[in-house]
Image 1: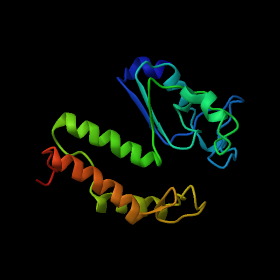
Image 2: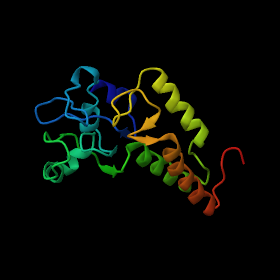
Image 3: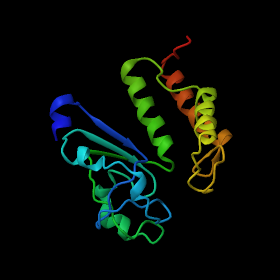
Image 4: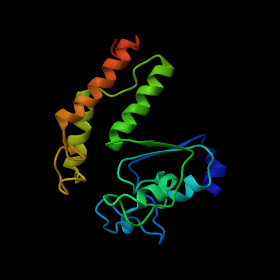
Length: 173
């Protein structure tokens, strides 16, 4: 834990980040072992008091807070994850939970910190162009957990509208 002592972070946030299961493996939403592709970040979360986990499928860092509940739902992973967090955000789509957290921070800051719909679409297209796959499709398509870019944009637009109703302006004015 020299890294924690050296950097002294005030908070760790994980969005859609696989967590250890009870046998110490990382499983994707389809239950496939993806351990070889994951840095063991769980240890950082286990040794820090201020942590946030954002997840949608039961296999992410933080879902260890709900191990019993997840195991009881047939559609969710059979191997419960281990890593708990001090604050858990559950969302239909992890990205959307992240957007919600950013919107809440925007309300506190008095400034819209959310990306524009166009910026987010560019990011998604770029990562897909670099080999990322959509979890639901299992292939490189510009989508977010099976939702089209348009549907993803609608979620962002709803949060932008919420902030606007609260008098929060965007970076562009």
